[in-house]
Image 1: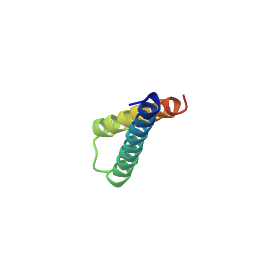
Image 2: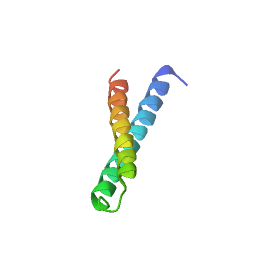
Image 3: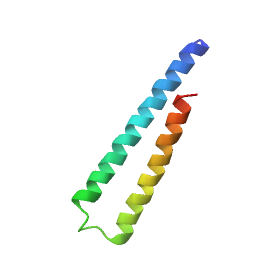
Image 4: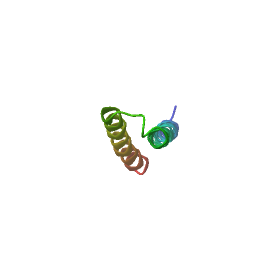
Amino acid sequence: MTKTDNEADYKAHLQEHMDNTVANLKEAEDYLEEHAGELTAAKKHLIEDQNERRKESIKGFVLGKNS
């Protein structure tokens, strides 16, 4: 496998991870909206913290994709 193939595989793999992370972020945001009244403050905080980590990951994916 050539270096070009490895780079293409890497970019495809990175894009797949980014797509999954974006989908998980959206799903969690929708869940928070739909169930806001049912969630404990602690559970809401956990989901919000995870979403912040997802946003940071997405930024990292974008930086990695552009390098």
